[in-house]
Length: 443
Image (cartoon, rainbow, N blue to C red; front, side, top):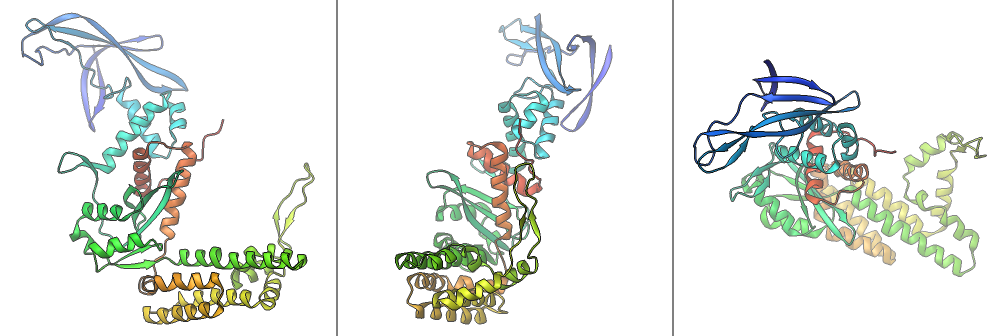
């Protein structure tokens, strides 16, 4: 007889096994067998052998298996049959616990389902089930009514962030709420309506929410209204990124397109062609243009002698071309003024000063009479309180952009995750651990 050791629930246990080395695996004849029926409690007697083969941790790239001869016992009273238990077998899978732990370790390091399946020799569905069980242990707990719920936040958050992302094609969205100080995902749910916020507040409780000062969000009025209804003390801060992005996309770029159409209709092809190449020039700041002008002539692309591709160099005179553009048209000059005014307003020291500067921008936009600037003036006016709140908290959605990038990387590395519950659990776990997701597996 030989004593073998194995771990169970973090404890090192001892059991007595007779070990025989066979071709392709290890055969264990367990000496412990059931003596009483689990149903009626009557004595049980041996009734043959029930062999089982468990997959073990691969060794040297080869698949290892354990062939176990289990004793089958039968109750003399009720006829119930019971096989000898295997203490190191994984629950629900025909693998050893050691292989299950090894698979979980690979997944915690950021391995994809495909890469872990190739390393361990298991199927992708088995690896996914193991990963989902691991994630539920870390992120899920039983609720009051017996249903599974997400674990409540371990840390009290001061500022929250909320935003939505595209979950599936066909305008199906999911909403994420994070702690802006740590970037940890606190809540994630399908949809982008008020019900998502209501569900989060009910989950954490009003006492926890009473210690939250502000929430950073885009200009989704549903989110702002939901927080104001349940927690009136929370201030909504409109993120700077979304304001500037709206100005660049809906004002600067659209004004440029309108001018191109007018110049083309007037047969002024040269001026229209100059504006076509000025999209990103009109969106750039003065500091960016000057920095790139200083790098003029620097090689930014090596090219290829094999494919006859010349090297790419940084072009200069960006600020000079920009000045020529804004001098040529009043609306382009207004774009330049608004960019600088927005930058200065976000440098304001208090909310009242920022409010005055934003109101000045609104007035200037309305004075142009252009429909693109009028739209932007209505946007600023409708979210003036949220924009001015930025001066008190200086909170940005930078953490959220990291979460969005993690979402894209996780999808790309996994070649899509149609199981929404598994996908949400993976996002929550990655935000807690901050693991670096590995690149997609390539054959």
